[in-house]
Image 1 (cartoon, rainbow, N blue to C red):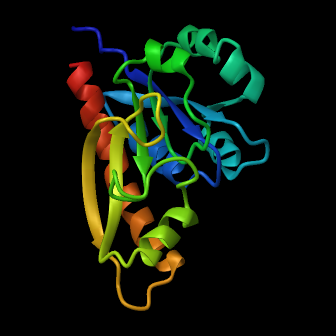
Image 2 (cartoon, rainbow, N blue to C red):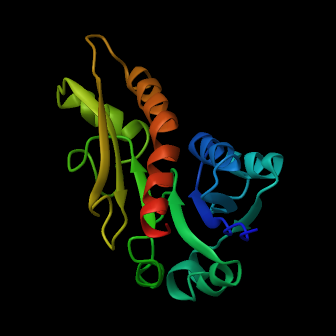
Image 3 (cartoon, rainbow, N blue to C red):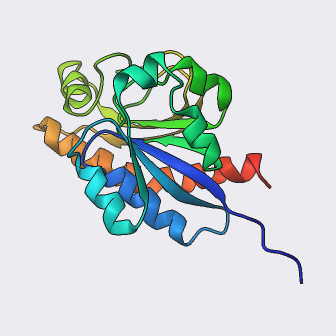
Length: 197
């Protein structure tokens, strides 16, 4: 009988509550292609840490100095055979060492239709407030590769949702979260399949 192919190991990078990380962990539990082997977090006490522990996923808590001016935790990731990095509400810029080590293997999800409403400081509620202030009729999500600039890498997938009269940032956030949870795990799995058939 043919030996079963080893699953590709994903590290999910997250800074906050971790709802996208949770959806990724749960989705890849039943995937034949990949598994979430590690959650990387830069904030002690972030909700995502409790989620990872509940789901039985190892956690790496990182500190700024080593991430940006040290080895970027690259030896740690390589020792654990991490092949893909998936950003899910991770607020630090990815250092060049990781971009060089994982070309086209780092993916981010952004809560707007890039190139609009991207860049430094554009995350969470700030994005939805900017969308409302600009009078946009729609917003959405963008899954994209990560390069050395914020929200700049090649777009992989986008889908939109309406901005309705009377919407508050929280209303848009709810629609965006629904899109993220629906699409991000599937899109990530498709990318991984392309690279590792």
